[in-house]
Amino acid sequence: MPSPETVVDVSLGDARLPTGARVEVDGVPARVVWLGGRFHKLRIAAARALAAGDAILVTEEGGAAHPGVVLDPAAERHGPSRELTARLTALAQRS
Image 1 (cartoon, rainbow, N blue to C red):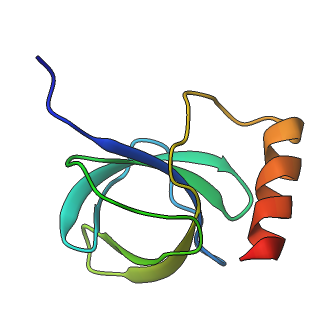
Image 2: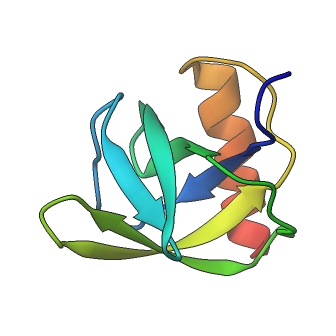
C-alpha cells in the first residue's frame, strides 16, 4: 500500500519552482509540479490537514524559503492549462 500523501495546489507569490524540485513544506518532504505563473502543485509526503487559505512555508534544498497559500487542499491530478490558471487565479483572489 502506498504511503499517504497530501496533494495541494498553492500560490507561491513570485517563486517559480521547477517541476520535479524537491522541497520541504513546513518541514515535511514534498515534490513540485509547476502549473504556470505563481501556481504550483505540491505532493507532500505525509497526510496533512490543510484548508484553503492556510499559510505554508516551502523551503528549497538550497535553503531558500517561499511563503505560500493553499488554494485547493484536495487537488486532483492535472497539468498546466488555461482553465486551471483561471480557476486558481479566482481562488487566489478569495484568499
